[in-house]
Length: 276
Image (cartoon, rainbow, N blue to C red; front, side, top):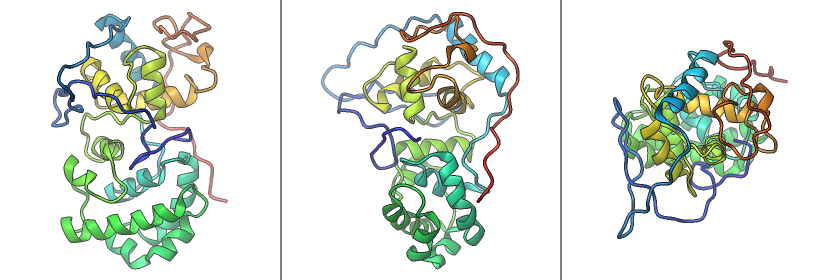
């Protein structure tokens, strides 16, 4: 999440355009963003057969059978706070800031008691820390007032919280509650377009086009596989095609290698640097 991002929860900045038609994920209550306008745009033709899409995610599943969020958290509340803080900040930077914060307050009640000044002091090493401190306090107070101090397992309720938008809600629903959601951060937005797997001008369009094509049983972890692939292999400035396990299937214009890397199991998450 270190690339240029914006909006309520740090989703990718993109010019406005009609959203793609709605699509439901099997086994999940989550629906993709609904289309707008008088007539829906024709869906772009992707250069992958269904069996090729399935093979892409099968290989990701072999690499990391049980991927984990790289944001450190101990419960749904600390996950929610960490995701809110991650806008325009790296996961490593957020983890460094939240280790002390969560040691002092890991519930909405404790966070509200901590107060805005103390929250700000804990997170001042990350971007937009003043506004984020206000949001963390406000969402903690909202959770206490509206939900008895519990993080709701409901998209509308999550998005109604201060500092929380669709991307953040998707992460919480996926990681904390096991919902088959797909949060489009900058990595997934880039991969959807670069690989021509789910081209779109907005995060909502990429999400709406990705959700229907990810086959079972891969929907639960597709979010993490794509993020990790974008973060460590299909990087923004220059993709590392030599380390790519789907190089033979990829249709990216930037591709420099068509021989897939060795398919071996990797750690669920990379070791994080210790607090300094």
